[in-house]
Image 1: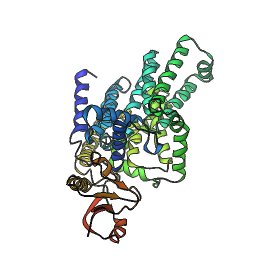
Image 2: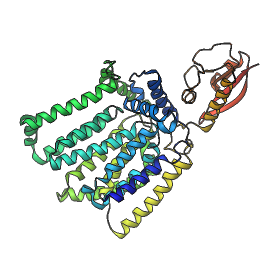
Image 3: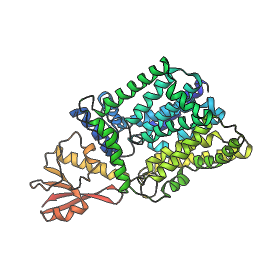
Image 4: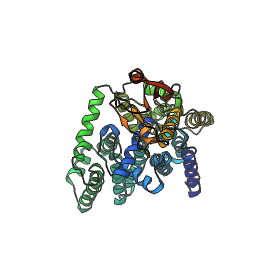
Length: 465
């Protein structure tokens, strides 16, 4: 692919990721993530907690906050960057996909799930973009035996491990494929060669890769070498936490949860992947499959299997299935008149759906399965009311026993408005949840306003009578 084409693709990617990036309110999770990064910047405090995923997003965002200022747009720039990185490396897949790479690039640009969550302050696009880069480096090393590709893959895998716990799923996918493909192509000679036959180059690579990974992992999880207990929390502690969440059915959804989202939003990637099964089977019988084809199929299959198995099901995890489905399906897209027409129709429909959910209907969590309890604009209005009263010198407090007041801490980060889980008397204004409304009324307060924070969840502004 020539440089002008790549430059045009990247311009489209940048434009679609940055356009109206501040229009959608910071969501619940986004506001928590942005707040953690802000506290890291201002108080120099960070402790890894697996419930909020890996430290890389917070350190990277805190750095951007220090350079460009702390705002929602800057907070969303790390996912934007890694989305662009993923598209850039997808362009390089042409060496294995031929012209079919354009279909894969299209889906990396306009898949509704990928586009929506590329503009969302979560860790998922860090993993997607980094893994596409790591896979490129893996296959380039297979072709050239140049060490630089091994070190590049290690770098991206380390970033993934410092970003989110499902990085271990990705790592297991890549390593198990390398093992199975080696046994498939060489038999037990592969195991002997890998385990018993060592030379200086192999030792050097093992040492340097271990050092790169360990240095990056240790730096982030120990808070820049200040808390070495973070190493346990980032490994065994993280696995223990998410196994427990799986057993508790945290965010449990029925088995067909992702199937509905894929059919509703990702019909192009899904349709291509289903059609690709026929051609994969045919090429397997003819023993014509390339290593890259086998990897694409393996990644798609394992991703679908793992994420459907996990009880923790949320819409942003869809991206971890859509990308491998898109890669596998694009690889086998046919260049016939009928196929071209079908792909064109699917592409147009994908564009319409992606633009609608990303730029128009982005707050409608009630009707959009891709959106998860999105914070409503009225929550931002409430924060403005609080700022106004606090600036005017009014005594005002946010009281919510269950800490269910996000995204207010993020929007009020520059104001020392108190938050409390216990009732504290003496304030003129109290903001609380509807479930605590009667409790506050009994203390002599009346309702002044009602604000929808998330669909169906309201907070009330109350004033002392």
